[in-house]
Length: 159
Image 1 (cartoon, rainbow, N blue to C red):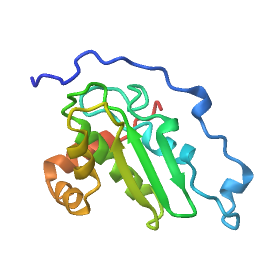
Image 2: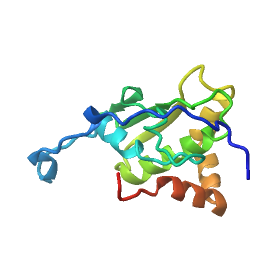
Image 3: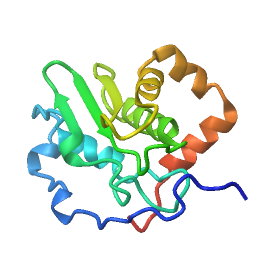
Image 4: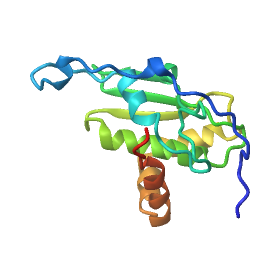
């Protein structure tokens, strides 16, 4: 069995206040419904960690406060925090966040994913890799990597 980067991560409880309450306008296609940070958070919070049977929300890797959306400019910026400074899964986690958002958001959005400054020893390299279209495309051509991403993006019925 492979050794885990963080064998005993701290587990946080899900934020009950972070649940978006749908309004009648949310279901009306005639109403302009801008994308906001809560909506983006709802898309990424249940991504599974590649090493543990926990979500990125439970590990505090993604937080609502670290998601910035400018709907008018069609820009989304997600800042995530690896659980440890030498996390070997940081790039994979960021790739999962990017894939989820690229699949869920309208194509007009430019998505930027970065590591919280000072929280990872290779933060610049991870940021460069996650925001380079060619590198992301090449990663998604790797069948094994794509399978792992799909596993992280799969959801269970108990959420």
